[in-house]
Amino acid sequence: MSTHQLSAQKIGARASSVERGSRDLESRTNVPFDFRDPDRIPLSQLSYLNFLHEHFVRAVVSSLTVFLRSHVSGNVVRVEQVPFADFVDSLKSPTCVGYLAVQPFDGYSMLEIDPTLAALMLELVLGGSGKSNGTLERELTEVEESMMGSVFRVIIHDLVKTWTKVVPVSATLDTIETKPQRSNRISRNEAVVAIKMEFHVADQVGMVNLVIPSSTLKLIHQRLDQPWAVQKCRSHDTEVAIRMRMSRELLLDADCDLCGARIRLGELQALKVGDVISLGIAADSPVTVTVGGKPRFKAAITPIGSRMAVTIESTEAG
Image (cartoon, rainbow, N blue to C red):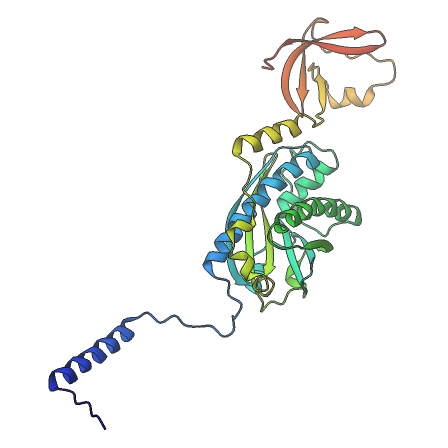
């Protein structure tokens, strides 16, 4: 039987190697594992979700511009994983929340529209100019809920088209609520990924938040590691050209303003049919043509048969 003998030099070398290995292990930074949060999404996948929803924002901006008949722009602010309790407690109350049933997955995702944007969207859907600075400070009426349902469906349509490039899904609007803190559709203890997006609608700015349970994303984690799953987006010039072409089809209100004299309230109350109000301006004075509530042209009133029209005299409204 052969025997192996180690010299004192070899024994010393091996002892030094073991000692160095022990020091290396001690010098490594230990990362604690939270057993209460087993669904944590890797940072690489959160970055991919950011990339994916940048495509979604570009698509929904075009759709909302046409639907609301107003200029809309937007961008992804950040994507983060948080406990649902922390996220929902940070929202304003009341706000406008739509719960999405996403197939083939169980549970719900959540789409939240800032109450300032929600109030503005309601005004635009009703044909308003979008100039008010109101906010949503109460429960939605049945009619308002129906109108916001139409807005949510426009957003959901583009969301599904974006996600279908990664995994086949379908989504429907389950319900609309204004106080998500009281809802139990998503457990407060559940980890979620919040995609926070900023939208500019007319003159207002507000947030739109998409919340997806981390447990849902874990089911498709392999697809989230494949950046090729999303088709290459169209160039910026192409996007701008498409948006300009769609904007040409928008209908804007054109009005004619004839500014005249001021009248006392008592005189106004005394007016009756047949009375004449002198405006104090010449009959051939130009009028101001407003488009979308903004002064755009100076014009002269021109009769055409039994109708009145205006002839543009200047493109400077001032």
